[in-house]
Each structure stands twice: as C-alpha cells, then as structure tokens.
Length: 330
Image 1 (spheres, helix red, strand yellow):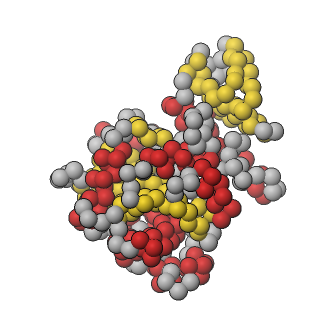
Image 2: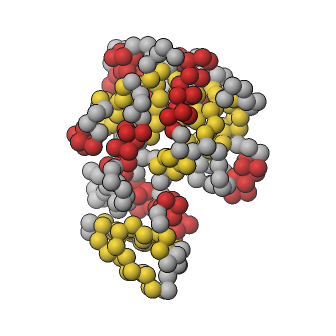
Image 3: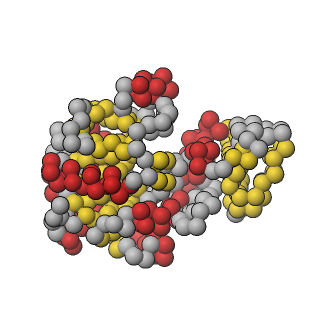
C-alpha cells in the first residue's frame, strides 16, 4: 500500500464514569491505573508502526498530551462535541498537513493486547481498496450490554460489509447477538480523509463539512454534539468490518476493572487494600481502602473524594458527575 498510515488518537474526553480518579483537569487517558505508562502513552506506543501519529484533544489538555506522548503531533479541537465533529476536524487538518493518506482512528483509553498491528494494517488496506469506511469488529467473549454491536455480511478477503449497527442491548439481546456472530463495535476505524468527509457531506454533519475549509471554529458551531456512528456510519452504504481476535477492553466504568485487575481474595484491587469477609468488590485507591463484610461494591477513593456504588450500577457515576459539574466541583 503506497499511502502513508496516519494514526489519529482521540484524547479529548474526561472519562466521567471513572470519577473520582478522573477529574476535569485529570482525564482518564492521563492515568495509568497500576501500569507503567498512562493509557494515552500506551495507545501512542501501540500505533508506533504508523508513518505519523496525531493526538486530537481539547486545548486545556494539550500540554498534558505533549508530556505523556512527546513523539506525537498535537491537534486541538475548537470545542469537544463527541466523535463526529472531532473525527471530521482531524481528517480535514491531517489532509491539509499530510496530504493523501489513510487514517487509523482510535480512542486513547482502551486496553488492547494481541496482533493489533496486523489488524490495523488490514483495516487500512481495506479502506484504500474499497474507498470505504472501515470499522474493526472485536470477536466477543461474553454477551456484554455496555457495547454496540455490528452485524457483518458475507466475509471475503479478511473483511465483510456491515449489514447493520446495533446500539447497546439488554442481556437477552446481547446473548442472541453473540450467538449469531455479531462483533463488538470497538470505536476503531480506518478511512481516507476524503472518504470520511464525502460520506459526512450527506449526513447531519454536512453543515460542518461545508465550513471546514473557511473557518473550523464556525464549522463546529454549525453542528450539535454527535457520535460518528450515529451521524455517518449507521447510514453509510460503504461501511465494512474487519474482524479482530484481540484482548480488548475500553475501561469505560469501574466495574470493567474486574476484568483487567488481578483478583485477591475474590476482589479486584487497584492500590493498597485490606478485605475481611468481602467478595466481588472493585476497590481502587491512591491511598488505602478497607472493606469488611460487603459484596459487589465499587469503592474508589482518590485525593479527597470517595465513591461507593453497587457494582452493577457503576454507570450511574455519571449522575454524580452531573451534579458536581453543576456545582463547579468536578
């Protein structure tokens, strides 16, 4: 493949569901969660095979990105408006600076192991050969309700057309999706800048496409926050999926840490902890946590903040953050 591969790492979010570890000035991607490197640094290292790497973030995070990923170029978006506007802006700016290339787009806060480079190069090849929009589909190992799903068409030469995208299902539906051979939608994409911008020109993001050349700031003002999946991919006629047998997790909320942390006495621990007659808990702290006689809780304590929530309601941390933001305390 003659076109250069340019990695575009999205790092503008805060990771609100991992409060209180993540805060407005300390986003999830800057944290290491017990590893040697931050999630952002691990992601940039993962795409080290790319010809160039860009990190797209908000202005207030730019210095932190440069500190943690000094080998990457940094782009700052005018304002955070979800993945749709972010990816269009990144495609436009990189096409200006690099020219004819293929973009490998990925979040900055996932944990991935396995043959990622092979999968990524395949996705890039398919994007060029089809002039289409390519997503990576993770082969699921459980009926997860926190992920979107992709129904593939007939596979040929390592990829398949996307028949349909499906939003996060209930458990019964997720079980059926896994049985029928659907993939998890991991938010890993490949396309040329021209292919993405052309597809977006007939989407809810069309007002942004029309203004990008003249005034990127006005382009952002012209659209509402929207994900790239909802705005472009779900209605695209040229969407393809490359299957991937990767060990993948997006660490979206505290209950996810049960899958990636070592278990001690039946509890997932991050930091120092003592447990007595406690099981099935996620205990995370930058200091010390003691848990006695409790089950299936998340206890997360960082700085001067502590969160306690039933593990199966971990998504409700967003409600806490919404109240804190309203009071200027996040």
